[in-house]
Length: 196
Image 1 (tube, rainbow, N blue to C red):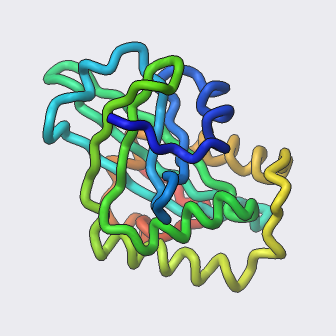
Image 2: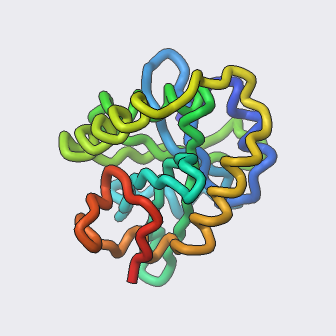
């Protein structure tokens, strides 16, 4: 498979640990996908690999938002690969990745070797319901976000909210949650809801 991740994401992918997912833009298309470096590609080649993806918007105590995309991949009967990729909607690049998720009909997953030159791709359906949830989240964000940051630099507020979110919510709880948790729409956004 030809790897078509936009060049700007290659450095970020190389900085990530193996099997740690990030959201990336795909070259030549207005599409967002999930990518990760893996030690071996064979486990990801099987057609129809069971994959679960769930997007969650979260507003922390300080009013700062993050978007988390939890993923579970069953590479075989005994192995599950789970992870969470994050977007900072205050960063222009991340906001555009989120915007693409409101329009695309498929969600690509790319598994890449260490050099990022060889990869295996899978794609899951990104339903009308998923796209609508992202549109609702974008509508909320558009009313409260300050001007988007173009620099892509460090954001201490976002890092703090990410740590808060990570401490409260495991990938397992995000993927196991029902569409509505304690009366708050889970798929689109929630505010400090503890999932139990």
